[in-house]
Image (cartoon, rainbow, N blue to C red):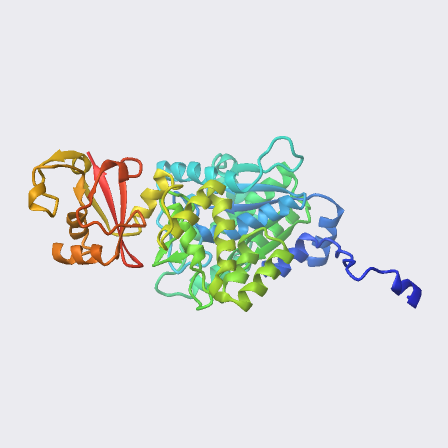
Length: 465
């Protein structure tokens, strides 16, 4: 370019935006592309037009957990790029148990338990994929029991088993690892799992034109078995793509909080605890998890990374992660309430919290139940510190008594000193009145009262009838 052309460019002219990344490029940038079959051919197929893909979720519990989010969100990423996802609830495979990545056999579930698990998991799948009828790539929710259960054992062996050699199956990592374990071994039930998952891929290919299966890296053997079956029985060239199994910076398995799974069902893991799981992400993991678990753009994540590097104590990246994932799983209102509840434990007010949010908060701090009648107006209780006022009518329960009952203060004498020293708060509002009687008007939803001593010693009171 000559100097005349240079002078025509305004100093603040933005550079041309880069061409949009392909879905594979985006997955790779996010660190989500662990492996795939025939990468170049898959890229060409994706570029040629929308593709139908699927991922299966076995009902091993009555809820999905945060570890399931990686493949679920991967399907949503494909859907956002114009492709059509099939979410498969494993009503059939769940009766067998996948040996992949396990050192022992799963406990077999009763049909009734399995049906209950499948129903609840379907509800959660609906939250994360777009099932709108007015879009061309609407998601579909399927259950492999619909086509696997009607097949007789002899028909299955004849129609599917003959296409697999035992030698080939034993070479798969998921099988070999268990075969080498002398203590647990591998049952024939689990050995058959690979064939059922392969049959799923064939059915979906022939019925819905599915060309791609997505799963965790531990599913590679099962996925490639499906590719082989589709090629042998239907002459279909299909693809497999695996995602990494997530670990934290300290090498521990992702998705555990104090040894327990972090569930997507709010009745198993409260929205508050769910939000807290993400807000407490290790500084070393937060940017990586922003890539894995959110739909924030590359530019937005890069900006958050720069802010995190400059001032990790501000925890801006952590808040963005917690808000984004909680919104995805539980909704915007619930995420906002979880954030407000978090602020309450740093002195924020309770005014905008729902009853459910307060109930969740009551599970996070010491909670004492008291009779609701104690907060009503009663006569001559002696709660006043003045002997002359013994017969007066007092509206509620003695603050001093409540502080002792909740163990925020070891004695009434210490409670008086703490109140007079401006160290006591009712619903995060300081109160230095030693004669204070707490009335029903101070209870949120007629039930909850938060007491605080100093900066961080909290106790919740819950009134009961």
